[in-house]
Image (cartoon, rainbow, N blue to C red; front, side, top):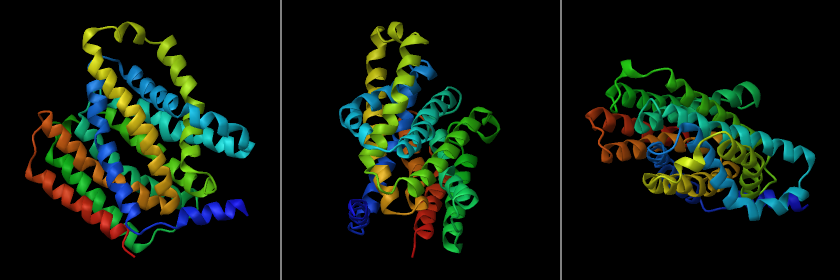
Length: 300
């Protein structure tokens, strides 16, 4: 009975609320790539990925720890998987990718997440691909291609194997979205986020303090702002944003929730321009197509 009431509570919300959450997430996650870039100025890719997870897990530890005993073994296993595919693995993949490709291009490639979500949902979770959702995703994906071909400080010929790391992260996100949507509807978003990070946080901490030179790097004078950028990335861009995102997944379809990655390139490219990257007409065309794709994919 309690679970039924909890499910009903997730469903009741103003029609504008999902769109507001979508916009906030786009702003936060669109800014995450520039924060990773700044973090890499003082820390290695492994340190960036680990510190992001450690900061997020530590922030939610007081909330998450008491919840563990109340969960079933099945729920704990699912949350462990979510911790790895939704947070741990992508954090490292993005950090290593940005050692070779720009922050804006990383944000653009991240727009493949809805396509991965849709394909994985159809392949493994029985999700139907409607004509509208397929058209919308196609339009948004074309917009991303326009942005890539238009250049963001990296020409098409300069895209190297590091781009595959970003694609790997989008596959993880697509799997994570479908798992949350299909296997955790009864859990509160704070529980999903907090407990999943609680599982992977110690592993990230063990790596950060045991296998890297973080203790030495963090003492350097130039490490202060990169450190603050990564802590903000962990607390705001991972912990708090994942709570909102998991709430959005429960309120709407996985495809709608993953559509946030269509808007993320806009924010990522803007940050890239502010950091010295050029903006061309192709960026505006691509951004327009992306927003059009979001509208078409989610139109009823």
